[in-house]
Each structure stands twice: as C-alpha cells, then as structure tokens.
Amino acid sequence: MNDDIALLREYADSQSDRAFEALVARHVHLVYSAALRQLRDPHLAQDVTQAVFIVLARKAKVLTDRTVIAGWLYRTTLFACADVQKREFRRQRREEEAIMEAMINRQESDAAWVKLAPILDEAMARLRDRDRDALVLRFFENKSMKEVAAALGLEERTAQKRVHRALEKLRGLFVRRGIALSVTGISAAISAHSVSAAPITVATLASLAHTGNVVKPATGSILHGILKAMAWARLKFALTIGAALIGAGAVAVIGLAELPASQVSAGANPAAATAPTNAPAALIVVGLIATDAPEPIEALAAKTKAALVARGFDGNRVDVLSGKVTRDQVLQKLHDFAQAGPREFWLVLLGQSGKAQGDVPAFQVSGPRLTVIDLKSALDTVPGQQFVFIGTGSSGGFLPGLRDQRRTVLAATHAEGEPDQPRFLPAWVKEFDANSKAAFAEIAARAAADVSDEYKQGNLAQSEHAQLSNPASGEILDAPFGVNPPPSATPPAPEK
Image (cartoon, rainbow, N blue to C red):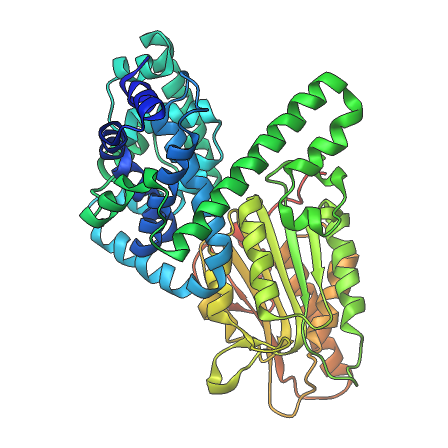
C-alpha cells in the first residue's frame, strides 16, 4: 500500500485532519495547475480545486487500494473542468483567450511548451486511465521510474514501457493537431512547465475540503458537475461491460452511450458511432435572408449537404442549422465539433449579408450577428484541416481575420447596388454538387468562371469577385486562383 493510500485510509477510518492535509499538500499543485491550464481563470481554478478535494473526502471510503491518487485527482479535475467549460463557454470565451495569451507570453522561452500548453489537457483526457496515470506520475509530478512502478504496482521495466507507449500515444494526438514534436521534447516540456505552485489561498481552501463546508456557490456548482460526470463515466463503463457479455445486440446501445450528450438528446442516429472519432465533419448554417431572395437558401443548404455526403462524409457528421439560427447556437455547434476532433472540417455559411455596423465583418443571424472575431475564436479550437465558405454578400472582409495555416477560406464581394444574395453563392453550390470530389480551390474557380460568364452574357460590368485565402502562403488570391490550386488547398476526398 503506497503512502497516499495509507493517508487516505487513515482519514477514512478516523477523519484525521492531519492525514487529509498531507494529501492536499502533496497534490494541490497538480490539481490547481491542471484546472488553471484548462479554465485560464485563477478564481475558477480555485473553485475547481476545492471541489475536487471535497469529492476526494466524500469518496475516501470507496476508493480501492489499487487507486493511483494523483491520477484519480487529475481525472477528477478533468471532469470538473469539462463541466465548468460547458457552463462558462459563452460568457468567458474572450477572457479565457486573453489569459491563455498572457500565460503563453510568459513561457516564450520554451517553444515546445508554447505549442503544447493550449491542447495538453485535451490530449491527456483522450488517453486511457492507466496511460494518463503513468504520465501524471512520471512527468507532471516528476517521479522516478522506480516510484512510478511502485505506484502502479508494476515492475520497473514494465512501468518504463507503459510510460513510453503512453508518450507515443500523446505524441500521436499532438501530430493530429499539427504539432510535430519528439517524445523527448514533449516529456521535457511537460516536466518543466506543467505544474506551478498554487496560491496559498487555494491550498488553504483545499485543505478544508473534507469539512464539506462549501465556501462559494460556484464551488457547489462545480462539485455537482463533477459528481454528474463521474456517474456518466460509470454508466458508460457498465454499458461497455454489458455489451461484451450480451454480444452484438448491444452495439447500438454502446454507440449511443459514447455520443456527446447534445447528440443523444437531439435523437442522433446511434449508427454514427461506427464512424471513426476523427472522421471529417461539417456545419452548414443558413442565416437571415430576404423574403424575395432569388433562390431559397434552404435548398442550397440541402444540396451542399448532399455534395458533402457524395464527397465521402458521413451524413450524421454533417449538421445543418436553419430557421431562426442564433449566434450562440452556431458557436455551441462549433464547440461540439471541437470536442469531437475531426481531421477535416468544413464550415459553410449561406445568407444575405456579411457586413455589420462599424464595418466589422459579420454573418446575419437572429439576434446579435456572428462576427469574424467570434468565428476565428471558435474555429481555432477545432482540430484538423479546415475549409470555410462565406456564401454571403460583402463577405471579402472575413478573409484577413480568418487566415490560418490549416484553414482555406473562400468568400465573394460585390459592389453597392447589387442584389443582397450574391451570384457566387448558387454558382458555388451548383459546381460543388456537380464536382463533389474536386479540390476546394477547383470548385471555387469553376464557380468564379460561371459568375463571370453570367456577367458577360448579360453585358454587365462585373462587380462581384471571389477571393480565396491560401493557407500555405497566407496570401489572399483573386479568382480564378491560378490554374493549379496550391497543394494545401487541394486535399484528397475523405475515405468513406
């Protein structure tokens, strides 16, 4: 029995303040640092830390002797932060970005850590418990391999292999997010930067966690969220075991249990769980449109989805938002896709206007408009290669704000006096429908040619021009974007 378990048993048996405070002193920095890294708010991190240790006090009697306390605390912190992020996402988006930027600026001396920090905890959450426990002990708490082996109940050589395999899995997750580092670079960066000292106030509050006196209402909410997340995790585990015993008949149930709660409540098809978790995904949004629009945009949205399915996308991973769509609904959907982790993501905005008051590019939806700042903040959290089509009038202003090395952006502009719904929008949908597996830039070039022909046939001066942001060079290219589209804008069609 290791020292942590001995202290936990002492507290469970006699309610020893000394034993619980010793556990807090050992692990409070780990919990606080993980919470701060994810939430980017010291006050929320403090609340999460207190809630996590309250849960530890409540669970002291039921944790087994084989429990790795550091790993259990880290996993519980992930549960807590996931719940907080769900509730705080809308309100704290801009504040969280500012805090993370400040944090990254303070750590510029280590280039690897600057790359890893924003997605470290997300990647760790995707590992199995045994792999996560090994990495937490070895690199977050800087234990020797002998100490890791003892905590995991393994021989030292076996523990070393487990740590190495876990690092390889973590490296693979980073590669999928476009970060190519060696396992040595990853382990060094985590060891040096992942855990920093928690403020004295945090340690004091955490030490009082076993008393059950919740200081703030926010801590009570976080506590409730942790317990709900734990219950859900136990349910998923039970369903998995049940599937193994019952056989193939339970596959659909297990698939449903693995879906995000938003998809389950929406009645999503459990068959979607058969698709790879990183399979390509897309979001099509129909914004506000004039009642006399020359072509129903809902029909264009349906054609776009059909083209994506023909391209190889799973229909259950292509969502369409139409009707009285709000800015918050779009951002929540993008947040959900970020959690799903697609290797390729398409965003198609179909609407009337792309210009807001104050000359800030924005997409018209019901209520507050969806600005380019909103879109960039949300898209930056979605992994994989991205393709964005802003199918509205006056949408050229989106390109400078959305430029990114893994994002190809297409938009069209038109002069004053032109119809609100641009000609380029139906032209792009038509060409995508006809050439669903062509490269993104090739489809855009075909649509631009169609629009030019339309102006020529009508003997009109062309006032609408398509532009494409090239992720390889960062340049904004005018139609027809060159005869041969740049390699970064020419992905192969995804496999079915």
